[in-house]
Length: 193
Image 1 (cartoon, one colour):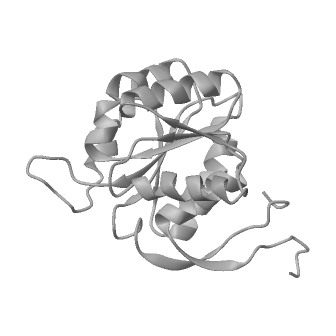
Image 2 (image 1 turned 180 degrees about the vertical axis):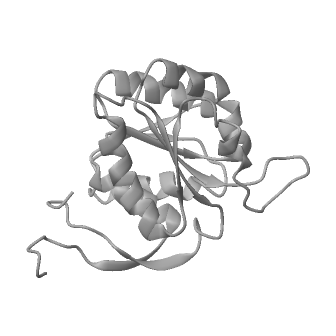
């Protein structure tokens, strides 16, 4: 590259895979996991990375999303970078610790692949799942494609962990339209991150 920066390859990946790539590049050590579609592929991809030896992390697989967010808060307060992905009712189930994280100024990151709230059973994207937390003191980034998911995740960790900020963040994108659609994504080299 003309600017001298080390760049990684361009990969054709989904939005969820981009979220996982960013977490790997950010060197998360705790992966919160509770499956809910369309977000669960982020955790699944991170587990595959761990099994291949690409990521040195541990999975926190608990009873529900509320428990996972509580574990993420505790890990972050102990100085361990974590990540979690959820959406829709899963996000709402963690309502209490989400507010607690903001008021306690705990810089956790949650990926949200938007899905409409029920009832009725919905499998369409709708950003209401994070908009209802508009006044909860969470930073919210809305991404339009997998490249933005990867770049924004890396930037979000830098922003929220700044001692002048110390706030939690949602990195969000459209469920199915971005979470499961493949696009070319420039993945930066670890040295650049």
